[in-house]
Image (tube, rainbow, N blue to C red; front, side, top):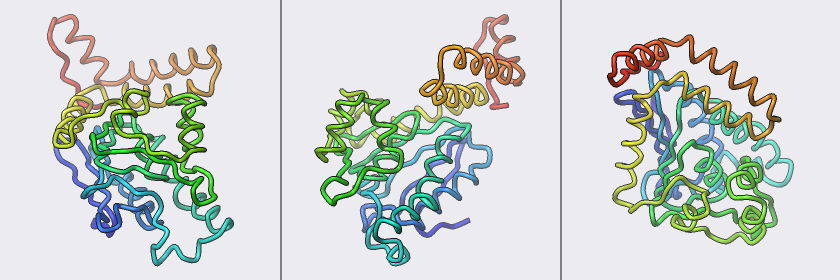
Length: 260
């Protein structure tokens, strides 16, 4: 399948989704959001996914000038765009059962910032920055930003990002714990691909359970978290990879996981 707004490549069980509107700094139109949503259902045998941007930006936020989005202006239009396009995408990203990596190669603003931070591992290039500039146009952060930012960096820094609308450079984002790490721009994709390869060679079922348990733990009490872990252990324990892991341990060799 071909896409108008993104590229999808799958090789060696690693999927790479590239936001592909560099002339618009990969600003996310409704059509782009829908393309990403569809692509996430086409990952086939991928065991890890990388999301990055073409050119000098990751994603400059929502595309306010996209031709098909003009009818969705104003408060009611924004409400419809979020509930019909952007929010379903963010939920889809959260519910993936494979590890996710974002290689943030430049500006990540607005919903682009939310997409960047929705991954398990956000890696920023030194030219990257993270921006919630909604306050400058009289709007509020969306795409799950208020939920993610408070959990990633705490209320004080989340408030700073949302209410002051200032850029957070990649290195500062790493210092804050907003992202996994910050690397030189020319090393960014190599770092992302090496990490994706490591994850793709791991126990995919167990990694998927970890994703969901980490997300659930943010909202649950201790007893519920313990129950979720037990349920997840049952699911992972029934996998072929768990059996391979046990045999490899007894044979004193490295496990060869197949993702099943």
